[in-house]
Amino acid sequence: MGWELHAISTFAGHRSTESTMRYIHLSGRDLADKLNRTMEHIHAWRIEALTRMNTVGDGGIK
Image (cartoon, rainbow, N blue to C red; front, top):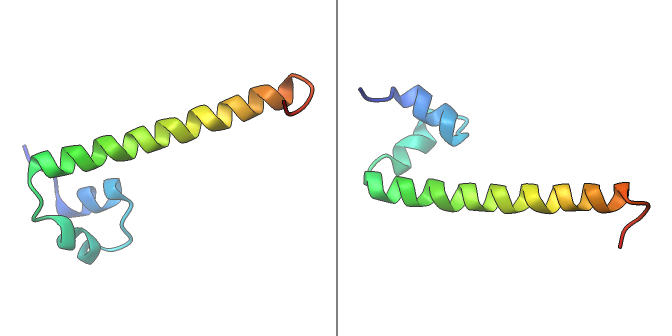
């Protein structure tokens, strides 16, 4: 089962399918690697944000 171009565009955060078409030629491995790097970045950002919230919640920034 494949994905429709619009679904891929939405998942990738593209405003238009033309942006997606620029990258659609990438292999599945390339796309998986890019997604993994992006998810690692998002995870690190979330951990940093949660740590800051916890620090502020402890009575101030440490």
